[in-house]
Amino acid sequence: MIEVQGLTKRYGRKVAVEDLSFTVQPGVVTGFLGPNGAGKSTTMRMILGLDRPTSGIALVDGRPYRELRAPARHVGALLEARSIHSGRNARNHLLALAATHGVSTRRVDEVIDLVGLREVAGKRAGGFSLGMGQRLGIASALLADPSTLILDEPVNGLDPEGIRWIRDLLRGLAAEGRAILISSHLMSEMALTATHLVVIGRGRLIQETTVEQFVRAASSSRVHVRSPQAAEFAELLAQAGATVSFSPATAGNPATRAVSSIPPQLTISDSIEVAGLPVERIGDLARAHGITLYELSPRLASLEDAFMDITRDAVEFATATPSTRGGNR
Ligand SMILES: Nc1ncnc2c1ncn2[C@@H]1O[C@H](COP(=O)(O)OP(=O)(O)OP(=O)(O)O)[C@@H](O)[C@H]1O
Image (cartoon, rainbow, N blue to C red; front, side, top):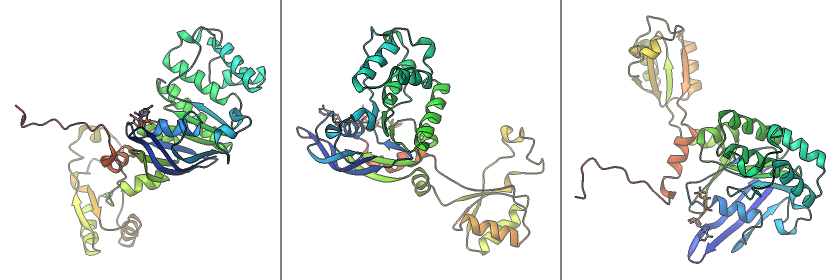
């Protein structure tokens, strides 16, 4: 478990992290999100005792990292900058680490299998691809079977199979009761892997929440409805106080027409967008009036939409929107 309380880090006049507090609970994967330069790596480094906070504290299992008697058994980490002796083979690299932390040779072979590096365990780590290097880094982090994991951009360099593998691995490790903190810029991946979120911007906490709440809060309250009685239903919805608009062409879309499950009689007027009524009320209303529904779905934002929305003011390196007017000539 990680507890960060009032953590602040200044580099000269630069404030990298400011009065940051959050908790990473056991049993869940917590995503650590923030735009470039938000202070994620600095925070992770402070939790791991690699950087001294200017003020505030970071605790792992109730103690500052430097006070842990066997730190590797409490927290395993994969930071972006890897420190693998490139001349050593993967197994020897892990054996050297194992010797430092009093971990058995059997466990070394166990983690090699766990990360899928058995076939290349005798090869020089210097010749590893980025993805293989990530797997070795993850093996190192897991070596002493820690109760907490901190992974900075763990899917970096992994192919789709590798990304799926790490997703399943992290979920499994969390289900065993471990506390897991991961950072990633891949929002779609984060949405699938993490259940909790800590979102920071310019070193400050923006939100500590669940992925579900984060996305829901950023989503509009519109509901998409598809019904063969859409026109009739639209009137009923309007009478109930909703604002109803008919969706743009779906029947005209060849991709939609190619879906055989959509009845041929369905036209653009069968899809409507409803605002101002909760989804439950819309469903009840349909049932009460014998309206057939083919679809009833709240319009949810993606995690990426939600992230962009909430961190808009906290982006340190904003990209200029290209001007179509050619202002600066
Ligand atoms: N050693 C340092 N000296 C001076 N400034 C630093 C140092 N380390 C980090 N910073 C600054 O602190 C801020 C936070 O950096 P940090 O690397 O923690 O952000 P991040 O959220 O991890 O970014 P990214 O997503 O790009 O990895 C940045 O403005 C960075 O330039």
